[in-house]
Image 1 (spheres, rainbow over the protein chains, first blue to last red):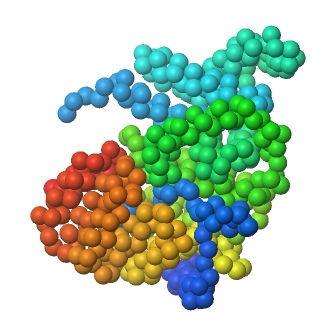
Image 2: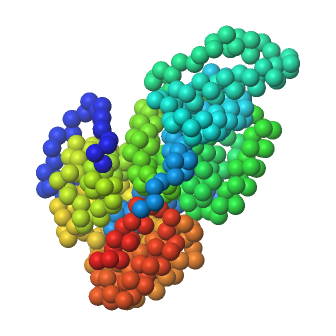
Image 3: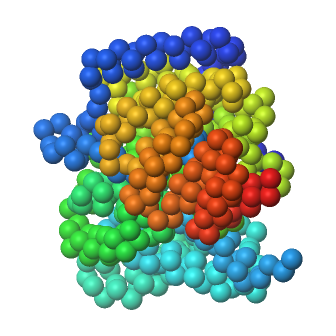
Length: 74
Length: 416
């Protein structure tokens, strides 16, 4: 990767997160997700366009993605 | 080892260049001459690349191929417009643009043009699938093979779709009037997200040719997404921003000095970029949906779990599997999502039953990705200690793999 120079022009300072900070942050998201899963609330990737339209319009059509598992583990 | 054939090498470089530059050239010419000339513009850009290919075989690549291509495409377009300028409606238009012989490629001009073209493309009077295909083709220079893989479609289906769309766009030009209509674009956020996701993915791991990673495409997708984020406020945009940042944070560790893959397990996590990870968490917090979460959000949460895991062994695989399973329940049509769930399963509940589940995916997965099934089954057998079986599936994977870095990785694995 040495041939790339990464320039990120961001004004925001996100600070340094410790592992604990990250875990705490994720914990909040996980609780949220689990709660919603328990309630059965879940929808596909494209809710805006799907309102009132056919269900199939809701699916994500791009099937390949930057999957960490298939493109990093095996 | 046989010395690389110089023509083949320059072909590969041009393939890569085409993907990276064609969208920019098309965007700039479209802004200057109008979206209604998109057909002629695409042809001019294609012609310029072909001319470049022939010329560079002998001379090598110019110092700034982008500028060369912009100039040549511009000249070819002008010639074509001159030929057609007997048409009264084109006369005045061509006259005014004819004088400006050279075209400026100022950075901000390109950026503007690309956003405008992106917003125009999501207005195409086509089905959502065809809009995504056509935009990726026009703006991002995706080849039919790349499109087939991205969309999980057959190569022939993509070619037919591109051809059909071309005819349709030539007949129906009403979409041009809606060019860069921000209000309309707001309704097209799902389509925009998919396009930028596919662009990012192509850079995250290029599946064809030599260059296995093309970070410039990833930053291009990020840049466009940030511009869209300035126009529209939306939790899904935030989710995708978070996802991009989490993935980008791992780039410095994904390959060794020779350009070979380092697996997630082998990567030095100290090289993961803290600032980018921080940006990921920042956007993930903003991505929290007010009501029902979407798969974009789930995907970002999965990426955050990897980003926060202090080591490979401490990765919460069970949770990751559950999230992918949830995603797959919402999108049962996508076998790639199921493949990720099963891969995660290997790390917390490996057993032989998983082989059948992986095999069941084989018929539904796009052809060029089938080797991933074999590679994953090989990984499962390795985990369970079946060396012979592992090698059998590794060699099956090698037979079907056309991605150079993956091939090297599989062969290296075979020797271990």
